[in-house]
Structures are given as structure tokens and as C-alpha cells.
Image 1 (cartoon, rainbow, N blue to C red):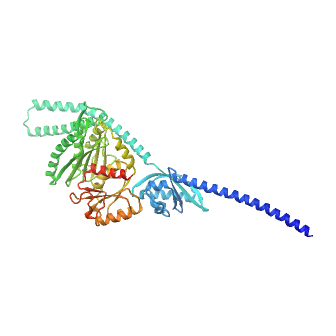
Image 2: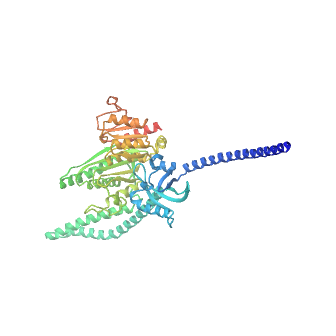
Image 3: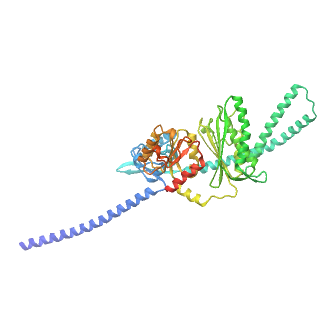
Amino acid sequence: MQDKQRELFQSRLKRLKQENDELKAKLISLRKDNAETLRSMARNETLLESMPAGLFLLQDRKILRANNTILANLGYRHEDIIGTDFLDLIHPDDREYVKKIHGLWESLRISPDQYEARIAASSGMPAYYEVRCRRIRFHNRTAFLLIATSIKERLKKEQETAKNERMDTITTMAAGVRDKLGPFLDIILEASGEFKAHGKLGNKRIEELFNRLENALSKALNVNDGLEIIAETGKAKQSPIIFSLNKAVDTAIQSAEGLCRELAGQRGIKLSLKSYPRSSSFIEGDIKGITNALFQLIRNAIEAMPDGGDIYITTEDNNGDAHVYIQDNGTGVRESYKERIFDPFFTTKKGAMGLGLSISSSIVKRHGGDIEFTSRDADGAIFHVRIPITGQKPATGIKNRRKKITNSKIMIIQENDIAREVLSHPLKIKGCRITKAVNAPEGLAKLKNMSFDMLIADDAALNMERDAFIRKARKTAPGISIALIVDAGEISGTDRRYGLEADLIINKPLDVNPNVKRILEILAEKS
């Protein structure tokens, strides 16, 4: 009996040992599978974070997850948006449309699986995205995976294509109108000359009509000349010469000063032109054409200031190009007009022909340059003319420095939009990313929530003691470079007697080129 019990016990023990060995082997296998699963999850996590497209994970319209790509593109941190309603990031003008589509997704009804909308970045500026949706299960509940792809470049190409097509149409139209109008003007001009040479004037009514005819003929000839310039975009009207850009600017200013005096007398206002020639370069082309283009831009600025004011004309050289900035504090350009202001005959001014800006654009393009502008309604405008410098190529050192500072993040605290744009525009051209703030509290708040390479603050916009502001900024963002804009002669360098620890002091009025150069040097040294 004992032998049987012993055999049974040994048999059970053997079976348990065998089962134990099998469990051990299974546990080892499960541990390997678990380790591989964790590695796979880590790889997938890395893949999701490094995807060129942005990802949002939504549940009940709340953001549960966002990958690094979309966070970097929009300038947010995880804690800034996790738990917030996705619709809060959508531009107000697109919000109802997006809300409707998300509602269709949630109701399982037939709906588009993608849409285009503007998503607000941390700076407040909208960014254009194509958003695709995938319904998934997350923690046993329905969720939505949104794939957001920037369409900025596509929209830019579409706009450029549309712009080129429109300009081709305009050029063709201008050439056609000029060809049709020219012969009639020649006949009228010839008849007017004959009548003036041989006709007998004496009747006051006839003299009045003749004077009106000559005035109308002069305007018609000006229109025809303008159409001829527009129609010849890309062609050289005469043999090019090498000339000083400053000379063309000076001549244009001299021509515009007469208009300033005339309008100031008529309206009882004060108009002044202030020039800052900092370019020493020569350009190749038609000096009369470039002078005319600059005059048209200055005249446009004068006409945009019915209440008077100052117009600032600045020239400078940068990276193989000559630049002219024409800044006014007039009525600005409405958003709805910005796509059309270079079109022939487009004008908002009573009695104007609407050819000035079209002529300027055509002449500058013929010289291999371009014209850009920045403006806000009722807040003035800055027109920026760029023309290649003859026989000069960008220096290698400049290229290398540009690579270093590309995507550098700069915050500018300045309550005046136009003044801020004077400094931010050349920095944007260099690839810097600009965030704006209008006072010290807003700037410090953004400094706390976002990372910046440099802070540029106008002393007049701080609303607090400058040294206290700099100490708070240093405490919030240790190591950040700080530039301070102050009134001329108030401070120079980095004067420690005032408790300042700024890396750069910028005096008013802004000398754009050397200050931008110093800012780029500071950024390059930091990088």
C-alpha cells in the first residue's frame, strides 16, 4: 500500500515538475514577447513622433495626444493643449464648418474623410492644414486619429501660379489696349499740333475746349506710356547702364517733393520725406525706369496720407541685393485689396488712373527684382523693393551664418505694428520666426510658455521699469539674448549703471541694416 502511494506521489511530483518546466518555458517566452512588444511600441512611438505629418488623438473632441511634429509646427507644448477642445484651435471663420464635419464623423453618417482648415499657432497666427480622419478604438471607446498635413507650400504655389496667370492676362491686355489706343492718340496729337501751329485762337470757348483737349490728350498719353511699360515686362527698352541706387532714389525724392508741397498747400497739412541712404551699391539697368518706379511708390505713400505725416525712405545692401524701404503712416491697405493693388487700373483714390504700382512692379521685375509690402488697414504700409546688385555674389560667410540662424525664434515687444514690421521683415527674410507682443506682461507670459532665442523689446511698450523687466525676463528664460530699443542718446552699448544686462541697445530712429546684422551675429554666436 505504501509502495503504491509512493509511486502515485512520485508520478504526481514528476507531472508537476514537468508542468512547472513548461510554465517556466512559457513565462520565458512571454517575457520575450513582452520585451519585443515594448520594443515595438517604442519603435512605433518613435515613428509616430518623427512622422512629417502632425497627429492628434481625439476622444469626445478633447485632445488626448499630439505628436512632436504638430507641437513644433504650432509652437505648443504637450501641457498647453492636452485636454482642450480641438475646435478651440480652429480659426473662428472655419470653426462651424469643422464642427459640422466632426459631428458627421461621430454620428457615423456619410461624411468627407478630410477637410482643409486654419489651425491657430501659439503665436496667434493661423496655419493652413489638410486634416484626414481615421476612426479607431482607444481604451475600448471610439476615438479619432487626425492626420494634419501643412498645405502652406501648396497654397503658395497655387497663389503664385494664379498670380502669374493673372499677370500674363494683364500684360496681354495692356499690349492690346496700347496697340489699339496708340494710332488714335497719334491722330489727335498730330491734329492738335497742326491746329496749334496754324489755327486762329480768339474765341474763349474754343480756347477753353482746346485746353481741355490738350489736358485729356496728356492724360491719355500717360496711360499709353504706362501700358507700354507694363506690356514690356521682361524686355529691355534700352541698353542697360550701371548706376548708383542712391542716385535714383534721390532723383525720385526730388520729383516727389514738389507733389508734397502741392498737396500740403491744398489740404493745409504737413508732409515730409525723410531719407536714410545706407546703400553703396550699383545696379545695372534703366536708371530712368528705376527712378520712375521709386517715384510711383513714393507718390502712392503720399496719396495714402490725407492727414499728412512723414514718409521714410531707406536704402541698404544685403546678401547680393540692394533694398529700398518706403514706409508711411497712412491709411494702409485693406485685406481685401492686397491681391489686387498691382493690377492695372485698380485704385481706391478718386480721379486716379491706378497704374502707378503696376508700372513700379513691371519695371522692378524687368530688372530681376521684386516688390513686397506689409500693411494693416488704417495702420500705414511698408513697401520693400529688392534689386540685384551688379557683379556681386553673396559671400560664403553670409550663407553659413544664414544656415545657423534659420528658424531662430525671436519675440518683438512693440505696440506699433508698422514699427515692429520694420525690424521683423528683414529678420523673416533671413529665416527667423517672429512672435509679437504689445507689452511686458504679454511678452513675459509668452516667454514662460514658449522658448525663444532672442527677445527684442521697445522700452516705450514695456509699461514697467526696464531693469525690472530684464531681470524678470532673465529669470523666466535664463540664457536668452535681449535687445532693448530706446530713444536716441538715452543709453549706449550695454551700460551697467542703469542695471541693464541687454546684449544689444538699439537707438531710435532705427538704423535697420547694422542692427539686423548685429542681431544675426548674436544669434550665430549663440548657435
